[in-house]
Amino acid sequence: MTIIDGKALAIETRAAIRHKIEASHIRPGLAAVLVGNNPASKIYVNNKRKACDEVGIYSEACFLPEETSEADLLACIHRLNNDPKIHGILVQLPLPKPINERVVLDAVAPEKDVDGFHYVNVGKLVANEPGLRSCTPLGVIKLIQSTKVAIAGSHAVVMGRSNIVGKPTALLLLHEHATVTLCHSKTKDIAAVCRTADILVAAIGRPRFVTKEMIKEGAVVIDVGINRLPDGKIVGDVDFEAVAPHAAAITPVPGGVGPMTIAMLLQNTLQAAIWADERNGRG
Image: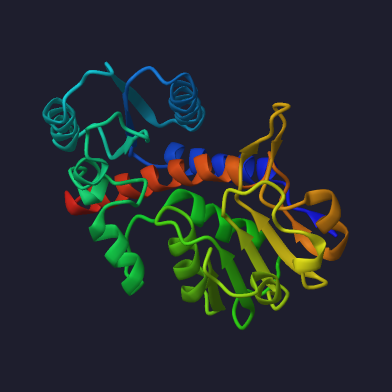
């Protein structure tokens, strides 16, 4: 059994990004937009900006008050869309009500949508055309690839059908030539389905839901869940201690998928900058 070290892989990925930036004439730029005073969201934004600084990406944050109107938020995004220093824009979710998240996310220029949430980028993902992909699903693929287990020809089961993780992860696995089953709350005998998986990705938001009885011996298990227990402990969707001895490789929580999500955000920002450079005839 191998514990997949997401922190180590993220450090390796960041080093490669920093090397590419240092070796090029490009200075990628990332802007984070945060509405309201959610302390956790502020921490996330600051962590992303710190990661940008470490690899040589210019970053700025737009902190807007809780009472910001949808029109003012859209005006902020419009300004960033037209700022040549900014190649990536992320809008920290959730947004305060009554702001319409879908309207806001689709206001971000597709070529700057480093979260991969815009309908244009979703469509490119479905069609398997070049575009910006969601960060967490990209990180999941990188973690699986790090195990050297072949994705092509394997049976991958994804638990959870969210637009942010489950669906895009299933599509990315499909594009890597896996046979993919997408499970959800209405799936009959979900344990039986999971036991057929060579690769299992758990992203349902239920603490320690996946037990050893649900795992095929020797499977690769990727735990996307982040759940806080009443005692404050953070656990994943997988019962790590029980499942780990039966898995060929498994991600811990924390220290698995989380670090790779930010690393993929940096990678997307660099990619967006490279494409912008090519559009401007300098690539």
